[in-house]
Image (cartoon, rainbow, N blue to C red; front, top):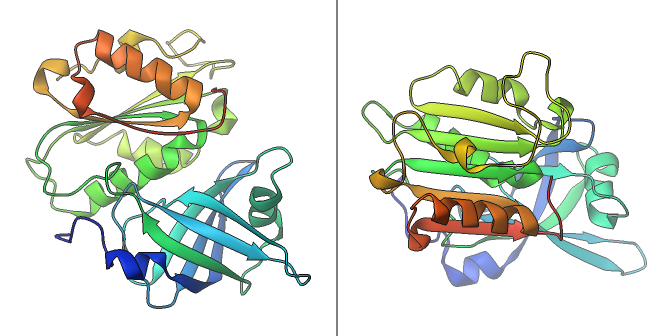
Length: 255
């Protein structure tokens, strides 16, 4: 997966491309994965996002940014969209876009919040709600390379309740392997078998059993603004170097 710092070059990434929906996969009651076929896609890195534009017959357009949820697979781009209240674009993508329908797509965007297979250090992923989407792209990319002896991954994923876990079955499978440790944090309602009490993210949630801040992991934190700020503060308090904490945020509040 050796590529330039950001795939495609500036002119290629600024171009709008036609994208056709070829598959829909429900993830939760409010989230769906959309698999798009994008003509002449320049490629992307795990953690990047794209701009999606919808156009109405009367000429009205709306554009929103969405993280890519899977690593590069030719001209296929996967986006996981969570419906938000009164969201004109997310609502249409989650409920109205049908297989065969077309949208316009631009990207990839972003060069800092990315993971490359050449990175040798441990990786700590911290997600709040749909902030798991770009982190899932990193986990999937990790699983597609020869990871024998590679860096360990730990995902700490905060959700309100069990039904909000995006990629539930896939994460359960990843959590059984030696290379990926998956830790779920339930803030409002937990499964009956859960041993962690319900509540917001705490410092001890971010401490792994085999490695910690002294091993200088790269930390990727994604979620609503309040969640990201709180998680970054916890990481710094645990001794993680601020310049090794990469953040991506959206919205005003967290799970």
